[in-house]
Length: 71
Image (cartoon, rainbow, N blue to C red; front, top):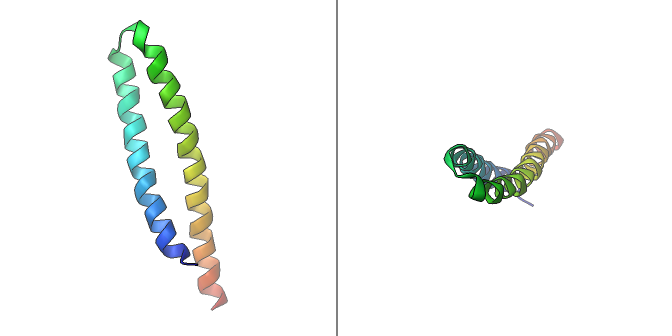
């Protein structure tokens, strides 16, 4: 399994997701109250995905280090 390739792909997607959540948070600040709940719900779902992806990325990074040491 190519952990380094997966790690790099996860890092790229993690960055994209982080930027998107950040833009949604900015949008939520200027959104009327009627729509704010919907945006905050989206943020909560995406932030959960971000955290899972972050942990997976960290795991893959550590796995790459272990695989290099083991060789």
